[in-house]
Length: 259
Image (cartoon, rainbow, N blue to C red; front, side, top):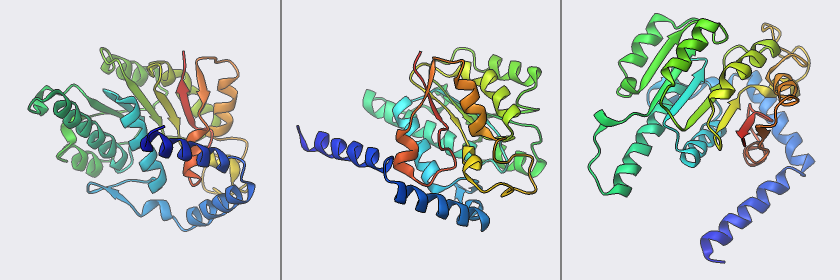
């Protein structure tokens, strides 16, 4: 075993051990709860745009994009656009890497990689900021409910011709909404890629933690994932990601398409 393989083997063993470490998991949940109470998740930008994500989850998306090398990323939920810009920047880096590996000059005009963002309400100031961003030409935004058949049809049409597709679900976090999103968008995920369902951590928080929101324990993305998977054999929960991150809003939310 060479040094790189040895390092990776040690990494896999360490990550697997976290899944059995009840004390570490409890500490991580406590920190997540305390930091969420203090709106810590609102503190970050990505290339100038606010991104409402934990740094750990941003790193996880970077690793996923490198592993999958998608040519299309579909996101539900836009907010200030930071997540769209994160995805667009990672796709741009893939183009640079592809050109370097091929020994050719990068021609951004020829890149087919793009991001599709869906939101029921794209605020004018956010729309302008995203469209004028240096990576805005890689982003296509669609306004409408993510589960409206008209919206889903638009996304499906925009997705034609793309072979490697990654989906990120992060809009309304109620059980029924996420269940409908999974039915609509998971079929667009390519085999070997992922559908990441954010905010499944709601089910691990105390009841009433989100008093001003319609989701709660028993009614959230995690409950939707578990129900949806009962009738699916083509997707599996990948426990590697929450085990390695420990602090994540997506426990049980990294769904890998296996067939």
